Image (cartoon, rainbow, N blue to C red; front, side, top):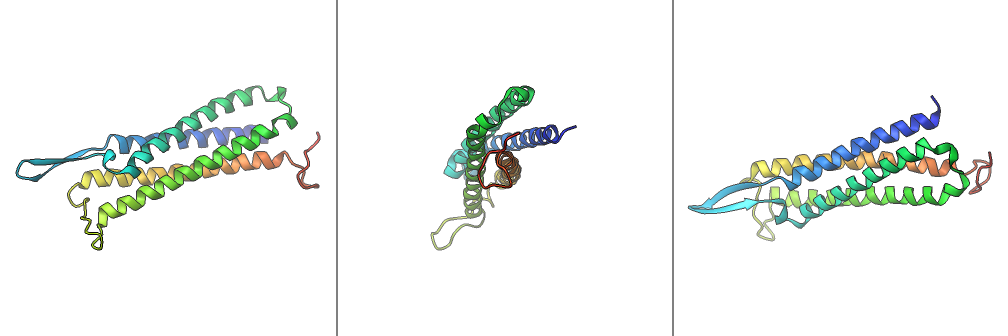
Length: 185
């Protein structure tokens, strides 16, 4: 088995794992609701739409999962016809795909961080701003959001590994003897 085939299989398994974690994150947040009776007959329903960071987490993780599915489809067709592709003509595409992978990692990680910060405010409250704790009333909702944030961070780590594979592919196109010159085979 050649190095390229092993790298392709590794990238495929990383992308599939990232897609599973991203879809799991989006589903855990989007389908999480809990209804509690606040006063005698007043009910409050907690959903992901109550906090903008949770809405953004659903949108960003769904888009990142879609992007990884598209990259997975593109990757399998490229591997199957790799002998027909000229390495020099693909350098611009490799850079674009590398930058898209990087952007996906950063946006997903940033959204997870914003969600974690909002979740911590819901968990602890803020006396200075007179914000009440919410998670002492909606415990199941908060537990499920916490699990979703953990899955989101796991997906970010997987996508960072995918991005490092993309970086390796881009840098492999350049010669190690001369800085930024294409390899000639």
